Amino acid sequence: MITQEIQLTLARHSRWLKDQPGGARADFSLQELEGMDFGGADLTQAKLTGAQLSESKLTGVNFHKADLFAADLRNSNLSGADLSNCDLRGTQLGGADLTDANLFGADLRDGTLMTAAQEGGTMVVNAETSNLEMERGSLKGANLSGARLASSVLAQTDLSGAILTNAVLTDADLSGAMLDGADLSGADLSGASLEGANLGSAKLTGVIVKDTNMRGVKLSNTSMEGVDLSGADLTGAEIVISVDSLPDDLRDTIRDHEKWMASFGAKGKRAVLDGAELDNVDFSGINLSGASMIGASLTGARFMGSALNMADLSGTNIYKGKLDKAEMTGINLSGADLTDASLQEADISAADIKDRDGNSTGRAWPANLSEANLSRSNLTATILRGANLSNSNFNGANLRGADLSNASIDGARLQGAIITEAKLPN
Image 1: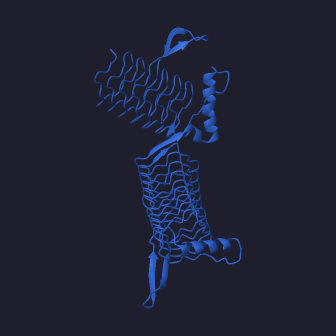
Image 2: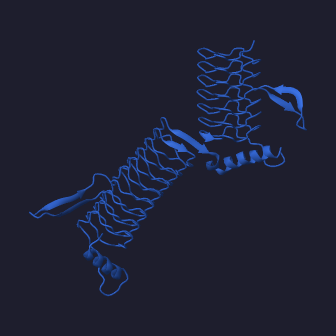
Image 3: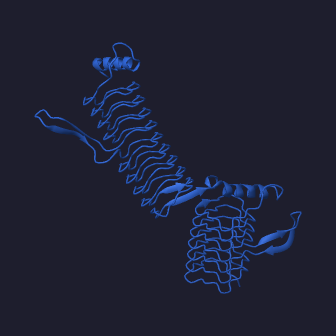
């Protein structure tokens, strides 16, 4: 509840905003207002410098252009509040709920409030050592476009769906933050820590990640066009890029190939992606049979359940790729690097050659893995029947239950490989 005096102040403020007689700008500076219910109030351009508003209900409050310099908003409920163009320098927001709040253009820089002490001299009312501290708070769906958040502490904060376009987050602590679906296009994350953060389906177009800690981050289906990741630490990161988030030319090439396959060549066009940079792209479930990807970079790419029958992936780099249960009959993987890849239950047997009417000719086209590097790869229950495995490297690979019957293994290396229950050629 709010007092009668506060109600009168709000009424006069409303008249002031409308230029009506008897109006006066609301001034709650330095007042103790902890636990108050201001829900839905219009505090546009109000003065709340150093106000104590912790634990308060501020849902839907209009703080547009308000002065909240060094205010205490800890553990307050600001969901749906309009804090656009607010002065939030030095404001304490620890534990606050800012779900769907609008902080567009808000000033969140450092701030220290000095006021006169009773004994004379000055007294520090609120001093913040960083721009914003709200560990484990909620900024879900908040508009922080262009916000200056350098050195802020937002660890484990819910920022899912938040708008952080062109925000300055240099040296900020975003470790463990939930940023799924957030838009960080153009943001500066130099020196920031995003360790363990979830950036699934987020937009990172044009972000700056120089000296950024991105250890263990989740980047599934994240849009990262124009991002230079060379200066970021991505140790243990889970990066998955959707086909739809690829540059237009690459995406269209893949979609045209799907049409080509579905129409038996009547529509679309065969994909030629030789030498393409396709690291961490998720091709799971996509039919890329017959595609040419010679020498492509496919580090960490996913082909789980995909069709790659008769495709040419010779000389590709598929380090740590995931190809579990993929259909790869007759595929060309000669000279490919599949170190640490997972090919569990994949079918890499010979392809049945058919005539124009789709009838079997009785001939088969063997899969070619000659000189391929499959060291430490997981080939549990993989079908390699009749494949050309000559001079390939299976050192340390797991071939438990794999079928290598009738395969050519001349010159193949199997040092340290697990071959328990595997069917080996005679």
